[in-house]
Image 1 (cartoon, rainbow, N blue to C red):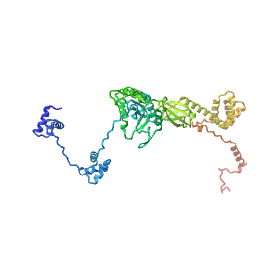
Image 2: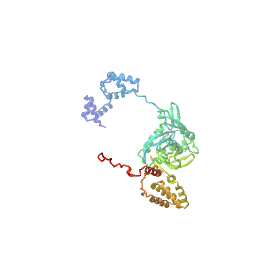
Image 3: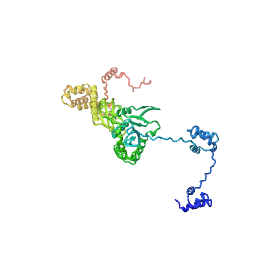
Image 4: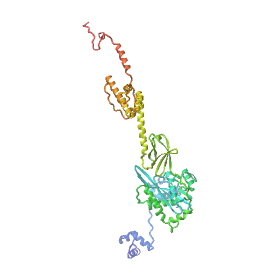
Length: 518
């Protein structure tokens, strides 16, 4: 603010001395805008700004005609057209000129929509950032339902906007309200509208099942008509500002607990938009008598997914693996998932139940499933060892039967026989087992004794331990050596063709006689 004396001096210099505005501002050390304001308040008409000729003036009429005929014509195309007609200006400045000359659409006026008590509710999703859970970064989605008459609000957060959570939000909202509105308005989201062509639309079948269970009418709003569900849009903005902004929470469960307290507390105590003299809670108490009652049984809201079990006893659901009994590998099962539990069924039989994880690439296991698989694999390894002994040394089966009748530990006997098979071979083992059975020595020590006895009698070198790879395809491979009797027969045949007198043959090292010796 300036003093009255300074205002009087400005008026005197303008009227008496005819000083221009710039001179008054410079000499009195005030802003030229202040001088214009004082003169305007005194009724002095403002001087019209000087109009300077511009390069676009000759083409202004052509630009206006083109934009009137084609309102969405791009400035780049219009620039090419005026360049062909001789316009010498640059394209950047031309874009600003077109932006000023382009006709603006007329503003649309909307009627204030009013609803009857209990008649309507509005539903929508809202994105509230992302939440880190272990290795997963999941979207934090808020399900919002608001009653159009009383503005009673339900707010609940989920980690995705899948159909299961969409249905779950409805059921939880109806439980909070202890009632249901007659009509629910939706945007054209995929959870509500699968296809739409004008007024013809195909609603999601699960949404229709929910509506049939609670007897409400699902009604999608017209495309690009956000004003028809403005109540839920304003409620989402109110939740962002009054609830979520600056709020701290430990996890999703803590955030939803705070959201429920906010819905039944601060949000319910705010003034109602239809009647500012009463709170939302008071108007909702009046509206409840006009809402629909709830059925005795709530709508089943479990997520249902048919899954295929692979080679390992796990099923994949929502980025994580859940264990099942090993006998269900290579089978088709069904997953029933709630907000906190993942159940796996085979037909009507429950075979596994796990707490739900929202991590990524996690393995949720039941210890009993893993222990049963380990026991099964151990039994399978013992069975493979017995099969290998049976094929390599058939007498091993008889040895095991006699040893079992005497109370011997078959596992120790099987492992010992497999080691002898690896070090001495199938023929030596079979020969030793037969000798042990002949002496009624049905135990591992007798087999080892006869193997060593036969090895000394045949003057064989001690066996060399060979470290085989851990691959069972190599360790369990049985190679039966060929009998050496064929090679002994070949040796005898070769000896029969040798001459009896060694003088009748000429050694390879003997040189033929020279001519001089002859």
